[in-house]
Length: 250
Image (cartoon, rainbow, N blue to C red; front, side, top):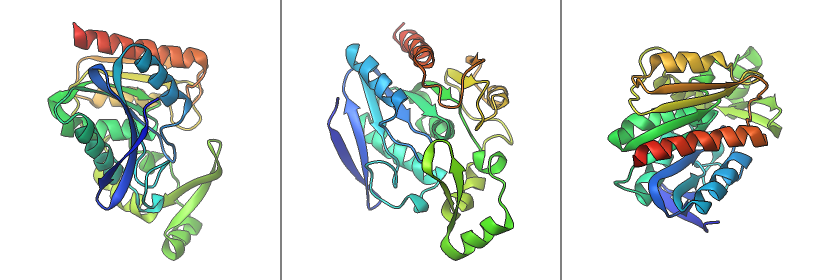
């Protein structure tokens, strides 16, 4: 496993692990309140290392091993974090972006900024615009935002629950993607479990319809949940990635 490294960015230290190798740089973008140590990220690291492929894992500001305040984070800020680390590690190189849940939103926002450097994108239960369709803000929540700058929701994926900040919600309207065409021309692969109780699987159809790319494939897992972290789900992710890497090499 690559050593933990830090990049100073905007007064915050961003943590990342970079395994050098051949081919496009494979970049894993975690989900909301997640980090680079999850099952999918670890599986990708082991797979890439065994094949001598370049891999980058990172933690957004306020998340995991990175510095900063999570409650100051937002989609725009986390896109900038990922962009800074990618440019630091591979300033001119080709990349394959893999975004899990919110990381899929990050990937779809990041891809236009990276332009022709993007060799492909994989979304795992990609959740663009989740602040619009996934959070029903009550009067109690509004009061909490006013008094403390955040409110929380119980979550099956974090024992302390998910926190949603004023900074996240203020930035979100400028980051929305599903109101028009998504400026992505790279090959896109969307993996989604049809028993996902956090992100509707139908969202993948909407994403596919809106991206500019003609090279789009959807993979629905009928009994798959939001995490898609079972051995068979990991195998699907790795085979999808292997095909993208092979296409880039051909």
